[in-house]
Amino acid sequence: MKPQFIITPAGDELAVIPRAEYEDLVARAASAEHDGEDDEDAADIAVYDRRKAELAGDAAVLPPKVSHLMLRGASLPRAIRKWKGLSQQAVAAKIGTAQGFISDLESGRRRTAANTVDALAKIYGVPAAWLMDAIGPK
Image 1 (cartoon, rainbow, N blue to C red):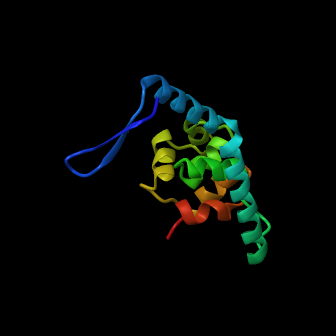
Image 2: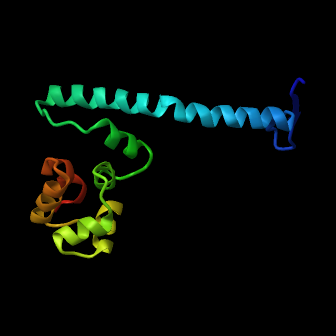
């Protein structure tokens, strides 16, 4: 069946299709999201990050998983923590603070001292420079 096009009083053009076709389109879109396109995007970003770091003379680059999480809206500190498979509670316990403090750092509501940034970097096994701009002292 061909789609029907209608124009609303506001001038928007709408396409009307049978429900079965709509559900098929939704299913295909959901399938495409899980067919590695996200991984391909993250890999492309990782290549870009690597080339940019090479030009800047910095050999440490973000892993594709971290870039992927950031593309999905995670802050850098949250993406690194999730990449390492740690909970906020576990990280808080390792540095002797409350889970809410970690949440505040990840959401950008707080910043912290350089020694705390160093401790978090050690827990995550990443260079402290990755975290310093995001959560370190200004």
